[in-house]
Image (cartoon, helix red, strand yellow):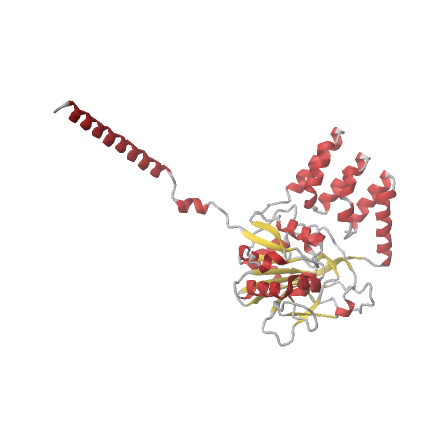
Length: 398
């Protein structure tokens, strides 16, 4: 064999040897890599929830709904606009939440095309929808009112809609105890009510609802609202509409300390997911032991407390903060965060503790900023405790 032939043979043998090593390494890699199905099992099933954000939806109610949903580690909550809805945005979600505000105004913002997209989302695509207060109004089948007719419910006494607000008393039904077992053995439960719908079964509707909790408080504080309208009416209800599931609450659990966890539970039910539990630092149905309804006297006291938050001494500000938390003032959650920046460190700390008491997790960023610039070491340590307490309310399933 000449030199050229030997060179060709050696090159060929080298190629074969190199290819053999490569194949062996590839086989080794294949053995060390777990099967793809094993990897997928480690990824939790995410529940994607959209919260409607548009004209008629109260900014505070939107924030409170999103924050309540954040309690659940498996829920991804985002806002969605009417423009996004009509261009197919709902296709990316499992559940739509309609927050408080004004139901007819939200309907107006959605428009006919948006409304049809939502109805199709529930009825034909089998997705979930949750209506809170005004959102509950929107999901009813109420004559003379703009609504989506998805729940089998009808709102009555609309002429006295502005009947009042406050911490209201309710009781669970047997069916409600199956979805909220944490509440089923309690004689009375409490949740914040703000002029929500008074509900009865809708006439001649093909959809029927199940009452999960009924009101015990008789709320007729203003607008010449008649007595006896709210007791016995549903506070929570659910139904099935076409292929989808519907949940209504006439109250505001998303802004009620100790009860916010019920909102992700509602979302889970409408999505057809396991009804997971939540930590005892947010499941606190025993915070309130009696109703706190804002009559004229309490409304006047609230106004005085708001005035003290601005013009009062440090001691008066602290007293006002504590009283507003005690009576669960609806607007206090917007006014207290500014006191994290008060000149007096005791006021700053009182504000931080109040945010923990009302579970106002939307102020985590605000509290982090206050902690960053705090000079007093003792105050800083206490602010850190408050910040950690708020952070520990998020993603706490068990």
